[in-house]
Structure formats: C-alpha cells, structure tokens
Amino acid sequence: MKVLFDTNVVLDLLLDRESFSLDAARCFSRVESGEIEGWLCASTVTTLHYLIKKSVGAGKAFDSISLILSLFEIAPVDKSVLESALHLPFKDFEDAVLHEAARYSNVDVIVTRNVADFKNSSIPVQLPGNLQHR
Image 1: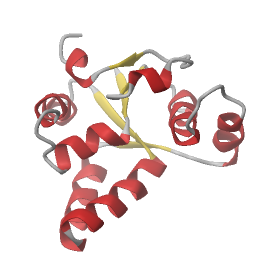
Image 2: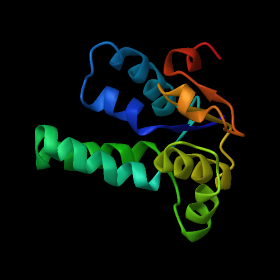
Image 3: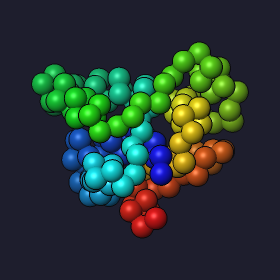
C-alpha cells in the first residue's frame, strides 16, 4: 500500500510533539519495515527542512532530511501538479498540491491529522492512528 504522509505527521515525529508522536512513530515503523510504502510530497521535504532548522538547528534539519530521504519515496511537484491543484475545491493550496502530487503518484491513501482539510479528496484520507489498524 502506497501511503503519502502530510507534513504535520512527519513533524509530529521529528519534533516529538507529545500527543501525536506515538501514532506517527507507529506509521513510520511500518514504512521502515517495508509493510507500507511511504511517500512524501516534494514540497513537504523543503518545508520540513525549513521548520526543523528554525526549531532545532541546521544539524538536526540535515540529519532529519537525510533520514527522510532514506525511508520515503518522493511525489514530484511539477507544473501539471500545480496547475491541477489550482482548480481543486480545497481551502488551502498546499493541501491541494499534496493531494495532486499523491494522485499523480498513484498513492492509495493520504495520512494527515487534518482530515477535514481533505474533505474534497478523491484519495482516501486517514488519521495516523487509524492507519495502524488497517
């Protein structure tokens, strides 16, 4: 199963956000074991680097991105993805881009803590805690 993770789920683990990090860690464990195929949107990687560097420094950001790239496939963001995202009925353009990157990469499910932001998704959307039971 190909699973694309929203930025918030990755940050939950990398920044050890207390009430969310356990579910994120369980999801990442499934990626690491090969049980599921983990994907990230290309724009997520740059956002992660920026936010981690700002929060805990450049060294941790570099190490985090290195780890991410060793575990996850990357869903490209190109002109087609961006143009498609512009026409989606999503409130947030970033979520629309993530959705279209997932769609173009034939992802089976998107995992996010903000399920409501993906109410117009053509791809199934799950909370991190629900993915572990699938």
